[in-house]
Image 1 (cartoon, rainbow, N blue to C red):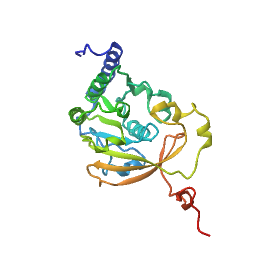
Image 2: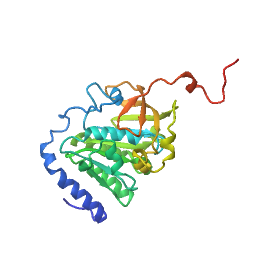
Image 3: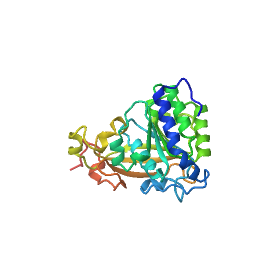
Image 4: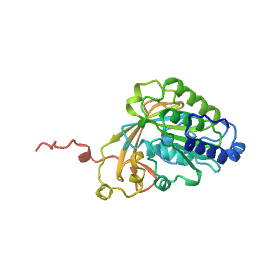
Length: 273
């Protein structure tokens, strides 16, 4: 491998280790587009084409900050994508990804490679290289912590690289990027919904548990309701939505039950006597 002298040694070593660990998997992996679509095993499957999420696609998750649930949803896709012999690559320039918490959500640490570039330029370089490795199952990148660095040209390169390699690219971006040009094959908007219950235990225990373990990658442990809307997905209707409930104590993502009318009523408004 020809190295880029601008990259710090630690990042080069991580990428070289990634290539070594994926050599055997590259030989065994079917050509891009030939492997079976991905079944997530959660209500998220309702948003993808019949049969599952195709391999080799770029998925953009648009959320409102670190507690939006976007990373948790993307991790559920990454977990399903961790086929035998294939690895998950996490681009973590902010050094906030916490492996034990991810393992609690089902991520296999033995098939996990974390790359921590020192600069934004190196971050894009590492992302570009990772999505080109055919022995990689998926690449997860928190783009909402590096706003403005992904221009249309880089976006297109990532989309073409995923298409050629069969890697699933998972880009976490701010909801403010909704109006920006995008080359993502799938665009999903994640919006918080009112919850019918609270988890005082999860709120009070602070730095303990799966949710807080992911630090800024995931918020403190409690039950959240989310609405996920399809902005773009071939084979699915634009505007399709699903209501989800996430409990950070368990890895499963559930369909949200309809809220009782009392929970939907705005605070402070009373029924007329």
